[in-house]
Image (cartoon, rainbow, N blue to C red):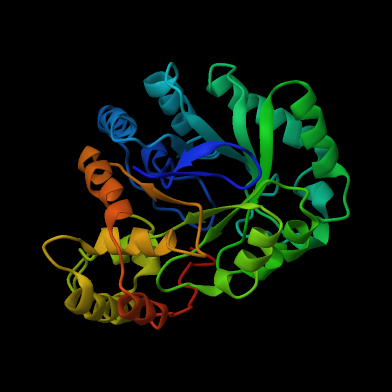
Length: 326
């Protein structure tokens, strides 16, 4: 495993992180009615295997099965030296953020209350990184988040703070990143959606704000395991409709034909792209199967020649498949 310092936090984190959405069985987001089932025994094996393979950064959220993901991490790795990141859900239940009135989304007392719930879920262990689960720069001038973060730090509940940026909308957090008042950002970034490279990443790097890339495998398509007949028994059946699945498989197959070989899988290529030069500090990926960790950590060993990286940069394909009302 390779490690890096996450922005100005001085936290030494693994370049591949464990995404805790899957082990919680998803989240009760209103627009996604169909979630996968998670097997706690398998989830614990996955967490342990990730840790044994050098992963020390575990990102989750209070909303993932109402704290179940947080408690699984505590029960499995609570005595280990790991770095924990979690998120405060929006009060109005909207992903992405819609309401410009922060008092209806993140009241100060609400942020503090939810952070303390997570703190208890982790066995009253100080949270290394607390993030707001959605964000819009319309809230920048509010004292709500500033006051809440200050209180939580003083009480020893959290160490560092960040925001999770709306799906496929990296420019919605430019103001807060430029201010330097947060320590990290979390944003969708992968071979297809490279939009954070335009403005967000340069600004974050200038202000030493840590970068966490989520959805590095494009909800599974960049694992290279899908075909035209692939079916889904979870919310992804709305994400990868028949026509979208065909388009996506065609694009992934083209990449596979050019870059996959006996020394590297499509998943490894996709993860390495996210943490290549001028990319993210860490790519967080779901690992519901223990074997996923074994494969994923090998991505840090991959090296792209200039022509290969240039080819991947040309695969930019920004589109928002997320269902708005399902």
